Length: 362
Image (cartoon, rainbow, N blue to C red; front, side, top):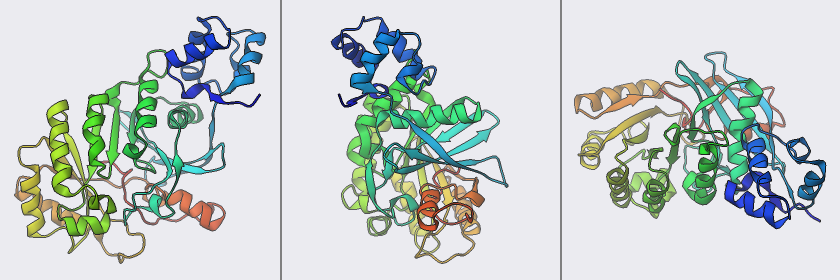
């Protein structure tokens, strides 16, 4: 029989139902669940807590979905590491591991590619190939922990893909990671970053109110934002901030506003006025990002431009910070490493390049 069920895509209760349907004893589900999600077992044959007979029955109807780390690049500037993962269907995704005094943060992908079309992001260049399964989202954490012999303390859904465009699988992955019998990560250790899929923001707050939320805004002007981020044509800035305020009221969370500074385009006095309008009475922090261009923007000193704009925001009492760039020499922003691998046929000539900077942290 074909292998039709990925065991690591199942909640514990779903696994229990599956085990009972196979004619196995109910308590085996607990043993299998712990083996997969706590011990990161990669094949059914490795689940030695159950008998060989039971393992053979399992293998007739199920398997454990895996991914592997294909390449790792370590920044010579800081301790940031960029991973290229190979999935079972030979597609590629990326991740970024950042080390801080408080522990390790992993930037996780949620889709193979992205269909949102943001003009400054490399992961969207070739569109979206498919959604990641819950097991593939979870396995990024497990593989990195095993590979580097570390424990991840924070997970940011800021890699390739739009998390809210893969809503159900993302929610399931976070709940599996939160499971006491699995990785047991606190819901507060997760942060989801969205380009502004407004209709899913409140729903995310209802499902997982403890998790953090970051919104890529980049301009409060509809014309400019729609040019940079096509998602704005469906969810304009007024609609987006109505949903953000509803989310904030529901959860009480502080909202992170991601804002890539593009000189002459979104750093004017009018932009500052709009900051005040849309952020008024909202619990927020603005994360300014210095642009790293892909194609259409000429290479200038974007870091200095972002610093100048930050000074202006400070003077207008806008709560903001300028992100410190991490891993700039290893193309640490989402989509870059895959792009080089596919275009150059390897990674030996990898150089610093362009993208959204979403995996850089202060």
